[in-house]
Amino acid sequence: MVIQIRRALPSDGGDIHALITELAEFEKAAHEVQSTPKALSEQLAASQPPFSAFIALVDQETAGFALFFYSYSTWRAKKGVWLEDLYVRPRFRGLGVGSALFDAVLAQAKVKQAGRLEWPVLEWNTDAHRFYEAKGAAPLLEWRTWRLSL
Image 1 (cartoon, rainbow, N blue to C red):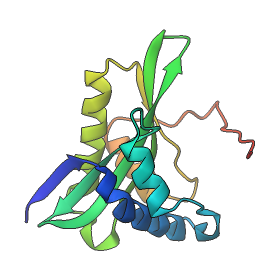
Image 2 (image 1 turned 60 degrees about the horizontal axis):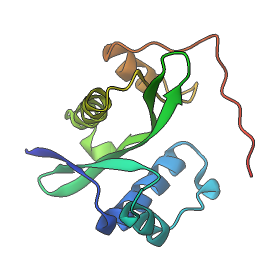
Image 3 (image 1 turned 180 degrees about the vertical axis):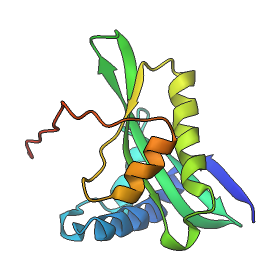
């Protein structure tokens, strides 16, 4: 078994969309997905893409992805990284694919001299909680994410 992590290319829009849809199904929110393969491909091809992503391949088969973008911390006066999605297809879980994707995002954050790496995790996803705790992360219990959909 060979795990390969590489940067997403505009041609990966279809695979990224499929993975987003699978993640949304897992999170019981498939009806909320509005992205399209075309939109994702076009955004990745832009001169300043709104996001970056890594694709995980296991023996050349798409196994998962990590999608992230840059934020800014006024308290640290540094760029931050927001990990929007990290998803590994069920048949590839437990093989180190999630760790390889997370480590790739973390390495990118360090290269960009980011002050922090943050991400959301659903309350009920205890497997993800354990995964991130094993990586040395801790939940921000005093903060609650709010959203205004436009």
